[in-house]
Image (cartoon, rainbow, N blue to C red; front, side):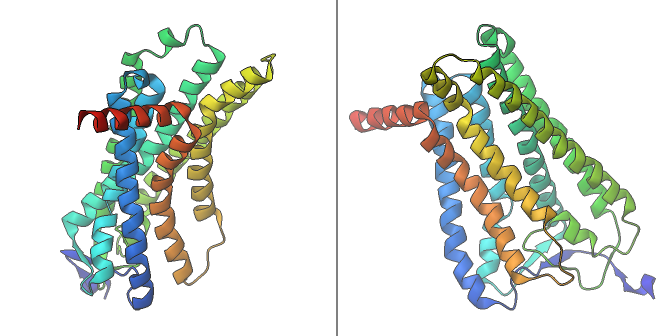
Amino acid sequence: MELANRTEASEFFLKGFSGYPAIERLLFPLCLAMYLVTLLGNAAIIAVSVLDVRLHTPMYFFLGNLSILDICYTSTFVPLMLVHLLSAWKTISFIGCAIQMCLSLATGSTECLLLAIMAYDRYLAICQPLRYPVLMSHRLCVLLAGAAWALCLLKSVSETVIAMRLPFCGQHVVSHFTCEILAVLKLACGDTSISEDFLLVGAILLLPVPLTFICLSYTLILATILRVPSAAGRRKAFSTCSAHLAVVLLFYGTVIFMYMKPKSKEARISDEVFTVLYAVVTPMLNPVIYSLRNKEVKEAASKVWGRRRTSK
């Protein structure tokens, strides 16, 4: 009977919010607006980091990478999700599903490593200020960022290939708004233990390990800041890492909440709505946080904007 139910998957149906047209009509303008803000905000951060010579530093090099990541992450699923919110035909091809799964995994994983690298950069800048230009050279910045992108892409390709090589049963209805790997694995007829083991190892390496490294970095940073004799000096030292700390709390706070909250036996529509908002809101807020919490970014943006208005 199991063999009879096995079919060659040529496409998947992304269930999303099917059956809830009112929620779809509400989410479409909301997600569209947040996606546009994400694109514009992160593109502005990238442009300012490139155009203003004063921002050609390791901190803003990594911030530019973070902005590229946020644009890539949201672009892997938001455009198709917006189409599906307006359409009754919510299918995605097998290849399209695999590509979306791989890119979502890669960009999400890379952000975990990049936030840890940025914490290390702040540690060197505050705790080793005299040696910072030597320790965090441009060559090392490129090497760290490139290694994060390459390793996470390799990990994600491996996880995707293992998952998508499994046989799938039934109607190929994915109970999610994207080709999320755990939702796709629920449709598999074969043994998913190898895929689940890969995901578990990857989750351990890319969630608790970087978070522990970030906590250690900020513990050392805090100890250094508290030894600064003047209050003005302490405020200046803390202001250089406050934006990054806010992004870390936002990213890991929402991840921990999503995956540590009690699981109900039946999927609730409120959980799906929160998942959508979490996936779209976090990348949108990153450039807002850096713009509001960082005086250099605001000054550079004003300078670039003023230069463009003058040239006209």
